[in-house]
Image (cartoon, rainbow, N blue to C red):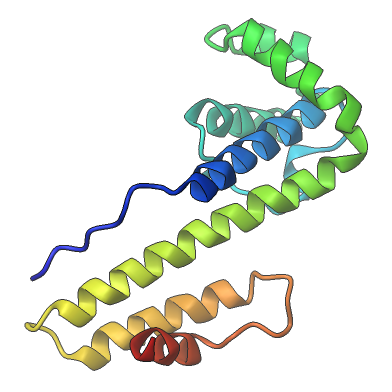
Length: 171
């Protein structure tokens, strides 16, 4: 099987990754500041690219499920492994952006969906290159995965998985 090589990230890809991380930080800062709740935006732990933010999000969701506000004091009391300066930084960064918490949550969700779509396409390409399995099997799995993802997008004009696979193969 031929190996898939991806080029180094372009400047725009690096900027997108930075933007995603900035939105992740701003969203969690808003959660800690009490401007929004971690579990009310449909995000999952996997939506966060930075492992520290991923763990912080999980902790915030856990505290909220216990009826506790994940503020600085509570986080410090229950998780002594979290860097206090890190928490202070993200809460200070988020303070002037409290009204944008929902937008930051949407940015995090959209970035996670984009990463998932790229993963599905990469798997589809690998399946297409694998001569030991029927092509239809790989296409079917990719199509089903893309169809599942398309239901999570905000747009009602989402392309079906089948159309996306055909478009990819004719590209």
